[in-house]
Image (cartoon, rainbow, N blue to C red; front, side, top):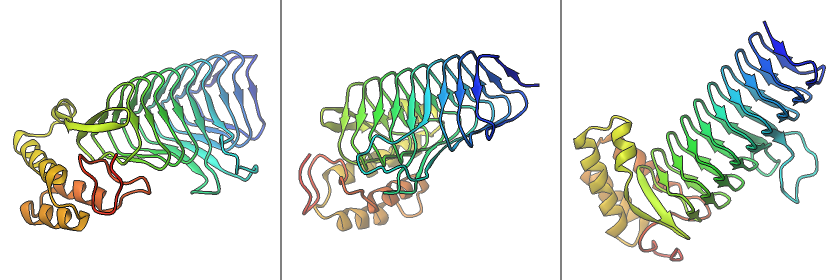
Amino acid sequence: MRRIHPTAVIDPSAEIEDGVEIGPYAIIGPRVFVGEGTRIGAHVVIERDTRIGKGNLINHHAVIGADPQHLAYRGEESRVEIGDENIIREFVTIHRGTALDQRLTRIGNRCLLMAYVHIAHDCFLGDEVIMANGATLGGHVRVGDRVVFGGLSAVHQFCRIGSYAFVSAMSGVDKDVPPFVKVFGVPAKIQGLNLVGLRRAGFDRDSIRRISQALGIFLDGPARLSETIEELRDAFPGDPHVGEFIRFIENPSRQGIMRRKPFEGEEAF
């Protein structure tokens, strides 16, 4: 059975599955889908073309599916997709995509978005991402699985954050953050491996050692990215985690990759 407060306003085109709870004064807009067992708090606004999976908790005053904050946006169709079992706390804002990308903003499964988090247009988040209070993603940011953002951290548009990375509180990220590392500062710099995150995720000692060795080659190795990648492949053939690291640095965004020294032809951060 659904439990919908009588003051909630729900568009006739919205689809609300069984077991959904909707609190006082919530607004559910056109073409919204809310999956089974999701709970929506008081004064939540879910605007048009948003799909929300099963078992999510959306706390009071969150706004999901609002228009992108982009001067080029002209009302074109776009959407938000949210997976299952996420916790979205008070005053979180998640904006729809734009025609400049895939017209989509996507949140994975089992993420925790604490109060006042902002996820801008065209961002993609993996699974089990944690964003502490006030953390902000600019548009077109790509975030891997099990990334943790400290409070008041911010990520520049188009950056990528690799899986299992840790972005410390009050950091400003303006380049791609490779997997498995921790970064801190304004602008953020690599401080080493995210050892706590890797251990919590069940990485064994040998895997962590190899990742650490690969990071050392990446940080202090050849000036050409192609040479660094070749050295990593030669040193760690068939290693799945180093392979993930290599695949990430092979495809930098327009912002470039965070490193102690720039690759040849790339500006220093």
